[in-house]
Image 1 (cartoon, rainbow, N blue to C red):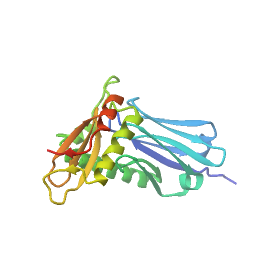
Image 2: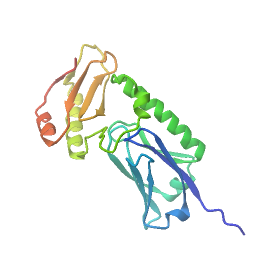
Image 3: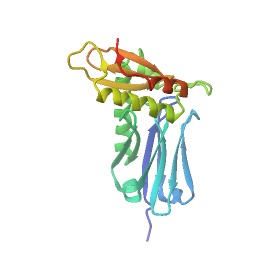
Length: 217
């Protein structure tokens, strides 16, 4: 009898060069402690660790916030689902895709369109070129590496949203935010008014703790 080993496809979008990174993963290739899926630009890598309880712990890079997201998935979901997507915890945009080859490829294509659309909304002139650019090793497209800084700023932003303390010229505004190089941009989807919040270190995050109202211009 011929045994057909289980396999799946896993993919993410590299936050360094913007390219989609996809690979087939077989159950036999996961018998070791860790499997690493690297982007060809060498700027990022996705880690898969097989746990003792037949689960898989995944650390996926994120093109939206530039940080790594960690999550755990069961073996059945990992190998048997047509498509499993995991979202960025800060922006809600999917950053990791697991499933059949065609479903994962389609999800990557849709993800690129979504990322480009979000970049357009915040005023990036050529988002498609940004996603397909070649970045040198010393080019930190996102330099917000301290998750405590991100957590603090996003905590304050959510508090401002909850208390209706973010203002623009719209009667019925729709606020959103995105992570950029060295700052967090909050903007209104209706009038495109925005404000940039510095996020280069703990001092910026601590300063933003004293913000009780934010006016978008």
